[in-house]
Image (cartoon, rainbow, N blue to C red; front, side):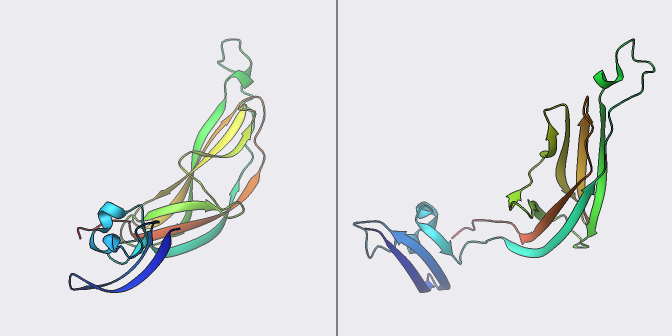
Length: 176
């Protein structure tokens, strides 16, 4: 049976708090305290490691507009317009953050609690029409980059609820 250990004290002159696991047969072992980097599989938390700090949380609603099928028959070499997709990109400004640096941030779907990664589908209609979303940022603002591709079926208006979590400290393993 393994044992979870909560330990607070001083190691090498530094005050630390550590939570780690001692597997069966290693009860009383403090190797995660003396060598946490070589025992990462056993360490749940250790104040010597730098963890993400949430700098800001922004909840917002993003509305995406209707995108119609291409109906322009001009200059299509005799082919029907729907065979020439309506495609494009729209950049939506979400909010000013004014951090003065480009933060590390993630975009969450507030309804599903799923992370919206680069080029995540917002809508997909049998691969005949789809809309993608990507979080973008600079040193002052957050943006949503919307990319759409419409062929055969139009994309309808859709509203999504999102949360942006911005961090001021990326995860880092310091030299111990």
